[in-house]
Image 1 (cartoon, one colour):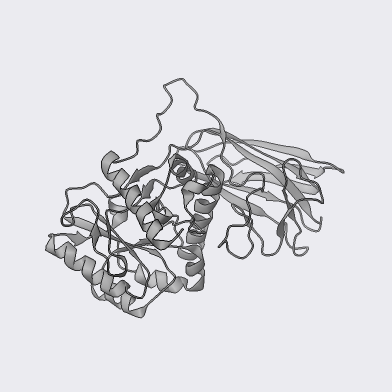
Image 2 (tube, rainbow, N blue to C red):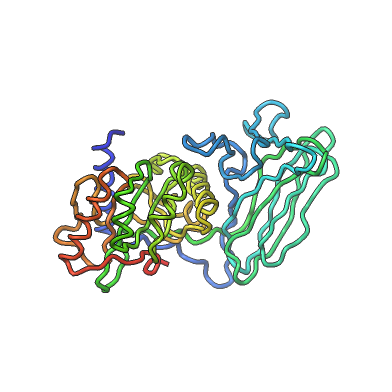
Length: 376
């Protein structure tokens, strides 16, 4: 899709939000009525192709040892579908662990399962609040065997770490059709602003492909709290730059997918892989899990809200104004208003874009503020 077409799609998305306001969360079950059980694992059947900008050949949704994990289609034959995971530990000191973070509800029982093949294969979860021993098998013989374990989350537990691994010196193992069965988190809410009467505005900067010292100096000199929606690949190129431009108190790095694709063209499972993998990259580079998600091109659908929630995201945020590359588009008309979210990008004009946005905010009597103080 061309850049002008993308811009039109963005305008359509924010216009829809202007009309309809916040997206209502899904209704909760009535007292005594069980919530629907779904599979919360990301890429459970290993069927999602490597993401277009994914980091270094990783398996979408999973964190595995470097060079140890591959998606196989023939040998051994998958348990179901077209693909399975095969892990070959790098050496005798490695168990070949693959893991992922799964968002869960507190005080809730979940059942984790996986079909495995090999010797001494383990399936378990940590960080549950009530950790239990993993399920394991000494050998599956020549076929597949299902491992199953059940855990109940603690009162303050919002995520768990699901893992699969082999054992020292036991050679390769395979896995397929992983499940974490239980109720899903309530879908994230969608908004184009941070509703408030406080005289504040919020500056957000997307992507990260162009990183200029001029923008870095402007942010530091004016002590601007910035919310950076940096993609994992630019983060990997120069994480220290994003740490510096978000050094002002109230700044943060938040989620923007791995591949910057239009999420409305993807399934819920693919959207979840895009958002969760970007979350994991943010944790690796910046030490904190994001809670706000900016959809590429400002386009999203109901699956986006559920996929975001499944990755621990509370808010799907678009914008009320675009000041990218010399623009000054305020989509609700008139001057900036309290709670407005200004969209910019890491481009070679970012320093001047920030100056123009700051001037517009000051003329409206507004002060840039910390987005995470208003969107919890």
